[in-house]
Amino acid sequence: METPHVERKYTPFKEILDEELQDPEVQKEWDRTQLAAKVSNWLLRYRIENDLTQAELAEMLGWQQPIVARLESGDREPSIETLHRLAERLGTTATIAIRPEGVEVHFTKPRAVAKESRRRAQRAAALAASSSLRSRRGPSVITRRAQQNSSTHTN
Image (cartoon, rainbow, N blue to C red; front, top):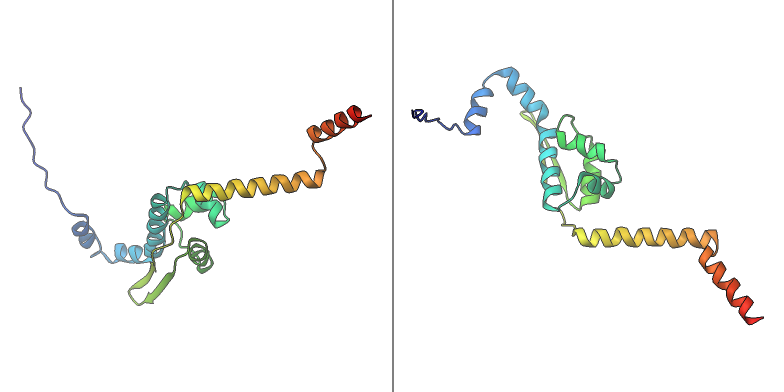
């Protein structure tokens, strides 16, 4: 027994959205959340295009990973300070337009961050921190033993 083929009509998102936005309450909520949604979409696209995890992006921004997750969720409207940090650290420009019909934000194309060069910089920073720490602690145990062995062999 064959099941009948049911043809489903595809309705583009734009059409559904336009219809829903006819309701004044839906329109009001849509307008209220546009800034957060645009920042969320832009940040997620940036992270994907640069092959970054939320933790890696957070490190670049000087934040903790949950802050990036919260921005990507689009639940909260970002502050001017947050937009400034994104622009500054990611090498982009954020332009905010405040109009009677709503607030808009536009980002210019940010500078790309090569993952390998970022990792190299992280390794170099870790190595520098490690050698700085070592010099503050004095010679390592291995270095001290080598010095002791060389002094006992010369006597």
